[in-house]
Amino acid sequence: MTRYLALDAFRGITIALMILVNTPGSWGHVYTPLLHAEWHGATPTDLVFPFFLFIIGSAMFFSFKKSDFSAAPEQFVRIIKRGFIMFFIGFMLNIIPFNTPVEEWRIMGVLQRIGIAYAIAASLVLLLNRRGIFIVSAVILLAYWVILLSVGEVGLTIEGNIIRQLDLSILGANHMYSMRGVSFEPEGLLSTIPAVVNMLLGFELTRYLTSIKDKNASVIKLIIIGGLAIGFGALWSVFLPINKSLWTSSYVIYTTGFACLLLAAFVWLIDIKGQEKLVSPLLVYGTNPLFVYVLSFLFVTVYLTIPVGDSSLYGWLYQQFTLFANPILASFLFAFSHVVLFWFVSLKLYQRKIFIKI
Image (cartoon, rainbow, N blue to C red; front, side, top):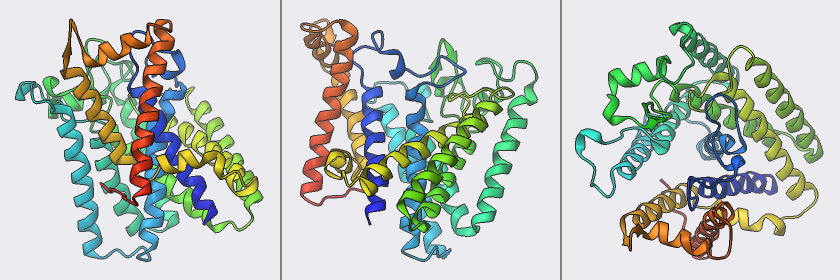
């Protein structure tokens, strides 16, 4: 069971990082590593979302293992139902507090992408064997590469990429995110397909990890796999840039490599060095990941809608941090205070053995 703790710690740090990067005191004052890359390239922040997809794939392995990976009709009904619930919750988070006209409601988002990717990935792991999963993953990444470049020279620009063109035709500009003054959906419909591979690789790497009895060997193999994936992703980026907004195939491989390295670090720390107490806060954080993410999103929405003076409660609280820190440090401390706040929420749920599954 200790090997599972490394995965729990991985899940915990991912949730903590999601809250940290999503709730700065001011978006105008943020440390560079806590911002997404402007377009091509990747910062530490660009690793967080694919890490989350990776751990969902990992969780799928343990969930489906209980039913011996049965591909029963009832199983697929549950998969579709869960995917729809995640999509619906994500959509509702977009439109709360319902002060945006219907014709401007954003349709896609983080949970929407997770819901769609989960429904597809979960179905594939029940229908295919290990070899089939890797073949499908390779086909998806290669086909997506071809599709991205099919628009010609402007295929990888924010205005001319095929992902945007497809979303414009299906969703409409008013129902998409606005990035740098352009209607572009970073969680677009087409770009969600390669995100499925992040989940599939999380599933397969967890299956592989749990099959290795020697813990030292598992760390070494994860480091080798991670290093090769990062190197291959970087090499591929020469032809297909690493880009989170487009969720390029090179980005999938590159980020999976870092996921392997982080997982190796936790296996070494917990399983080999026995430092479970050191990561215990992360273990608590990982017990209700999706619920805590949704709750943190709702908190921010509430902050922004409560007026305080000439600003909102969100702005007023940030200003209190600027009383004793410079703007960029105050922004970080504001975000970190929310990491601590939601850790206490997770702790109380954990102590009461309350595990809310979405």
